[in-house]
Image (tube, rainbow over all chains, first blue to last red; front, side, top):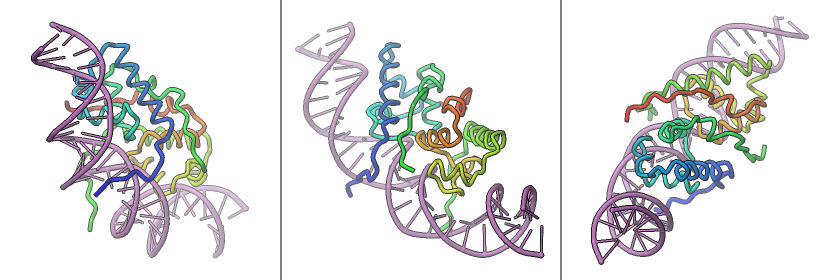
Length: 84
Length: 84
DNA sequence: ATAAAATCGGTTGTAAACAATCGATTGAAT
DNA sequence: ATTCAATCGATTGTTTACAACCGATTTTAT
């Protein structure tokens, strides 16, 4: 059956995806290789870049490693907009 | 039925838990309040502190917000030990 | 123009996060 | 000594991440 997302994707997730996208572009990397280096499926990496799917901490660390950037660079100033 | 974890908890997750624990202690915060401010169940916060459960990016951001620290401070120098 | 990579939208099985609850124990403060 | 918070282990329903695959289309490079 159709798998529907019930919750909104947080803005920070979108922003994180954009940063990954930008770094890939700046460093002239290939998503295919980045995915491989991070131990991810290319399609899933694409989902992170598009902000369709949220990632776990360790996934972020793997991607940072594959991009050869500090994890901090990826999450720096990411704001979480949450309703308490 | 028993819910058994199939994969190993990465060391970075343990380390992240320790940092959260330390900050709570240093700042004389109450886990109860931190959990509330982060919009989490106390028991789940405990799982993160113990490193029993891995968190998503946004959860980390919420916890950083509740602890009033920069997200970068939580993940700084976290190393991921992964087998490609 | 053709080949390789990227992008897209969708699907599916499985593992794990998330939320919440329970009972019991331990530690600390009044 | 009693109250409150912390800690622990365990459980459960629901949602989501993860991994993988597919077919189609678009972009990029040779």
